[in-house]
Amino acid sequence: MTTPEATGSDSEHIDPWAPPPLLPRHRLGSGNALWALGKQIDELGGEWTYNVFVPRTINFHQPAAPPLFYEPFGSFERLALEAYLVECAYEVCRPGEEGTLALAIEVFPSFFSTTDGVVVPPEPGETSIGRHTVSVIAVRGDTIYFQHAWSRWGANGMGTLSRSYFERYTRECWLFRRSDRGPLASTAERLLESDEPRHFPRLWRSPRRIEAVGNLRPGLTATWYECWSLQDESPAWVLTLRLGGVRVGISVIHYPIAELAQITDLFVWPPYRRQGYGSAMERIIRKRSRQLRCERLEAYVWDADVVKYPERPEKFLLSRGYGVERLPEGQAAMIGRSRIGGSARTGPILKRADA
Picture 1 (tube, one colour):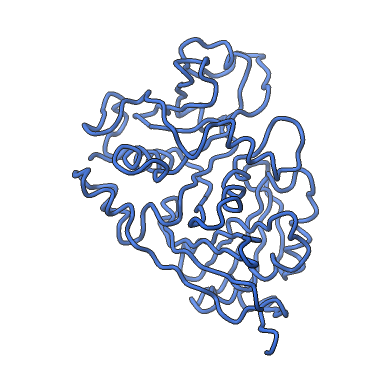
Picture 2: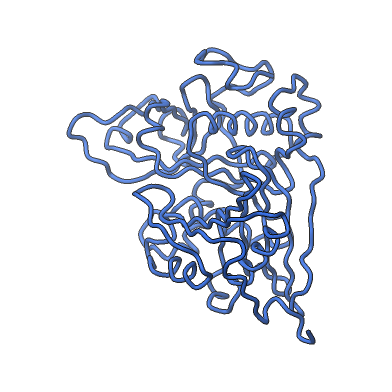
């Protein structure tokens, strides 16, 4: 098995046991089904939804299943590595174990008129008509192969775009897959370097830690799920908060360097907002990060979360003691920064009723 980095720009290289580049895939669901899930909670109206709403919604619709791990990625090199692992897992693992790579790209009128599925840069004066989401299925050299829900577009819904198009016109990039599948610190290198397909499923399904959080009020449970970020090459965890049988909140946390913890998502299911669950998860994250001797805590807010209610994320971060910085136009809209020792607030939601 040869990694994308080893192939260089040789777009003709195809791994001997990998599927053909333009083989349609069946992932977590059809494009239309995933779109419908996202629309349940985005509160945006219209047809468009942001990719980040899809794993959030799946996590709440499947409370008995391991939660999805999801993270954004920005560079073409990381996309190629993730696509390589997803492609290998699709080939040798059970359906649904490989995960999804979703891109939201800026598209132009020529996108809809192509007959061969090749996405080309806009002509001078060609105006953007908005974003379109596609699922990456392979990267060969500097070419990205993708599919979407329109079976009559391109080659049976399949298409390609160049690295330069990706770097200039991609607006949102997300990986999401089951938290009990994928690379870990102990397996990532072996997954990328293994030449034996028969070893891949065992490494992909390697057991990982699941840790319960104590000292919560009756009926409320919190659980940590161990993951690994290929984007940062660092430990990552998914935190779920449950009230009875319902997941009321979910968060994804990265530990890219020894002294830093990063909250890359903190989401509360809409009916359970303004009841303290978001603050409860932030306190749990802060406590764990302090135990890991982290000194700083960062919290990212994505562009999807400031479209309808731009003031809410900032108000929440300020209430938890963060300094907030608004970011230039991009996938991340703002970042909150806090010292781990700061805003060490406690509240009844984290204590037993008899404490």
